[in-house]
Length: 305
Ligand SMILES: [Zn+2]
Ligand SMILES: [Zn+2]
Image 1 (cartoon, rainbow, N blue to C red):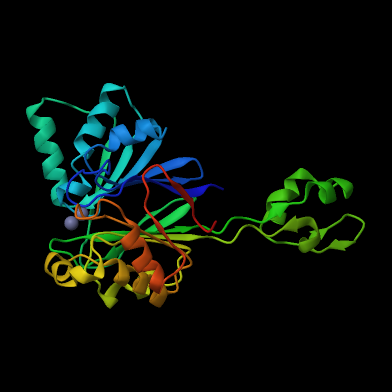
Image 2 (image 1 turned 180 degrees about the vertical axis):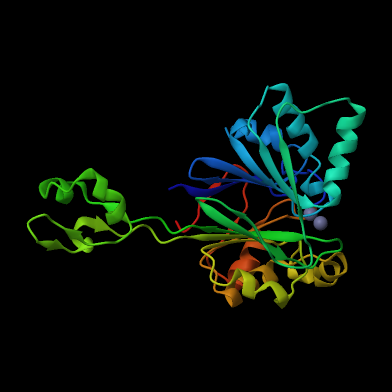
């Protein structure tokens, strides 16, 4: 089952040096989950061949413009392109008002259902639970209410070993029982242990998305031991005072978060316009947590890969 994330935007605040404001597209079993939607996200999706028609869920972390100013444009295009399939949108409660007022004065009635789910910014909650994943919010510490998102794959059923079951002529009706781990009792009285007829599914993986936030241990437990952690790293550590003032994190701190929470891999992003090149930020995070990569736009990271 596919579980990967493509970076669409990596810039904080404003677009600069060919970097776009924050957005990411998660592919989970061939369905797209869009996380944040900064200005320019539609263009980035076209550029990196992410089909906006395949987005089923959108998650907005907070109401700073660099995380959602592309949203109404995207919804508008989906409407103009004749979308009928519903979209579920998760975000701060006031986002609904912002969208409604824009469509009110353009006299637009969307052709598809936009199901809006307001996020409680004070408490972590499971906001989505479908056949592929659960999504929980992560309460972050920013200047305005802000939540991250923790995506956890569901454990899959065991996989049938076709050769073995066919050799034993196991009736097809029995397959779903085998997938759940039950042994096979043949009509001749023989018992075939499940482990001989099936193989274990892949281990479920977890992806945590943390942007924007002050370094704060309060959310560490929630993101413990994830396979891939995206964490903002707006500044280098010599700008710690500025990071604290603006409720952002330094690259060194992002490395610390990954290390202290037992992440397997770290991606840093949300880079300040101060940094034309990003080596300084990468080197700094790697000095604490070696398995760090930059959120380069267009790059796809396999979660657990
Ligand atoms: Zn931001
Ligand atoms: Zn922000």
